Amino acid sequence: MPDNHSQTITIDGIELALVVERKSVKNINARLRDTTLSVSAPTNVSQRVLDSVIPVLARRLVRRARARQVNAEEDALALANKIAARFANPPQVASVQFVTTQQGRWGSYSTKTQTIRLHAALREMPRWVLEAVVAHELAHVEHPDHSPAFWSLLRQVCPKTDQAQAFLAGVSWLSHHWPTIPPVERTLLMGMDSSNDTQE
Ligand SMILES: [Zn+2]
Image 1 (cartoon, rainbow, N blue to C red):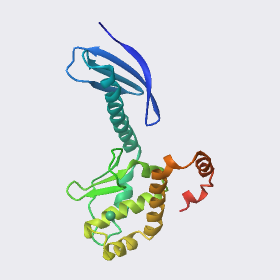
Image 2 (image 1 turned 90 degrees about the vertical axis):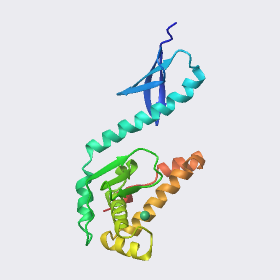
Image 3 (image 1 turned 180 degrees about the horizontal axis):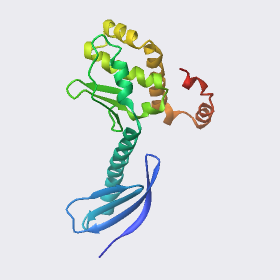
């Protein structure tokens, strides 16, 4: 008995048309094209299981698509190389990737792959903040720790290090507290003058 139906689901704030097809397949498969999520599921999988699995698959696909999109737009590699050149021993940077996976940090750099990975939300922040994160990760090539020598090197190549630390601490604070901030204060915060956000 075919059980095809379509509906919409919202993933990361993006509305997707959902098309579920029951088939004689082994696993639940999902495919995202533009904003249509097509799911094929074995006939014997319960609706409850589907309801819990689909958002997980959808979120993974939405974030992967978003990462492809932002990385196609950005020329972050040129920026990273510009920052690398400020070091006495410039680290090699072969690629820069904005990531949409939950990595729990703003950036990382692998000396093995010469790849800088940056939290995708950094693209939305002032450029000097992004630059500071790149500089931070590259400074770890010389000092893997957060020792005074690390900070002194970092402040040399990136004079806005301390401002960027404070900026990112504020962003982290707000993202953690946002759900518990009462609606009135939340609305007041959204009305804050953000002209300082873009200061160079
Ligand atoms: Zn660090």
